[in-house]
Length: 97
Image (cartoon, rainbow, N blue to C red; front, top):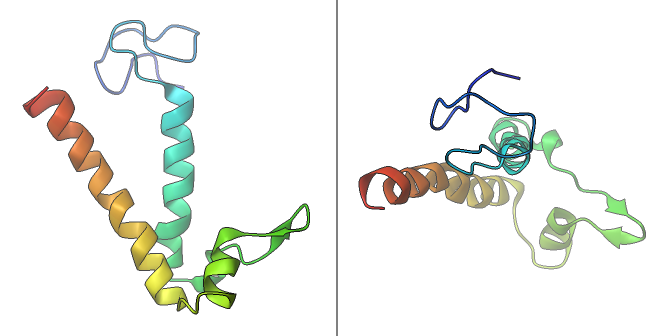
């Protein structure tokens, strides 16, 4: 854990969000974790979870088996929005608030 907020460089409190800019550290970490899976999947399709949980098929498995998506297409379709989201957020937070 860093001593400052990565977005506004304010001293970081013990809470789940920054007291100055309101950044939610847990949500940011979840985004990085989810996005990391699809970055890996572009090179290694084994990174895609094609299993089931609690008797329900995982979303990627449904897309492959029921809708005929190819693994390469799926990795790109999940990767590209994740790639554009940081740019979109930067634009709306700093350039044109």
